[in-house]
Image 1 (cartoon, rainbow, N blue to C red):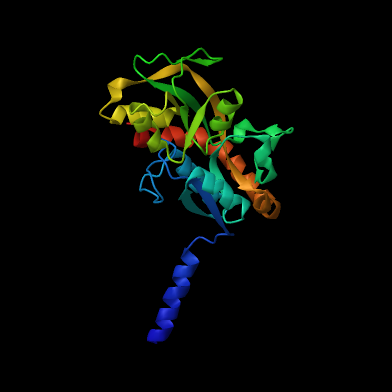
Image 2 (tube, helix red, strand yellow; image 1 turned 90 degrees about the horizontal axis):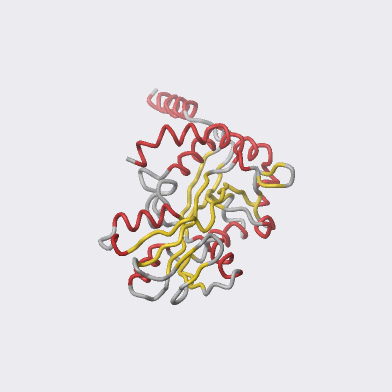
Length: 257
């Protein structure tokens, strides 16, 4: 009888758990991009961020189990190419990336209605520094411009003839700026604002307007994963479009207060 009771408990527990069609391995950067991704390092914090919660909820909604993996941005691209990750969070669209990534598309263009978020890149300088940005060109730059090596902005700036120094982690950028190793920093607005608000030197660093660029960010899957699970992926992207603004509004006090 005890054995039968034990078997009954196991069956009951198994039936009470959600049945997931498959695991989806989502990769995203191991740096804080508050409020979308919180925390630095490989761990998933208790409050992971708006985008992580949105992806988690939509993945479960389509009957799959989300598995989150945090790595440096460049490493994430390598892992997707190698088939070790199924999808990536927080990606801008570039035609080159479609070689190994599938984006939500509409009429041959990325479908912004199914984006994950819209984020701006900003330029930061030491107060009193002559670096300027008029919306078209950067002037007065004394030294290279610091930028994360995994951000598409690094290539964009280099194509404009800007001397760029790439780093692996965003947390390296502002100490380099304060020590004079770079003349300015280009990074996501949330990262830059987070740093200057919480550092002891916030009065020394200022943000320049207008944004260097404002872009839509997507959750893209590997080509292999999309080819094997296209209908499920499209349902997931549809969920992003349907739930994104509602969820972000509902979680605003949790992440922005």
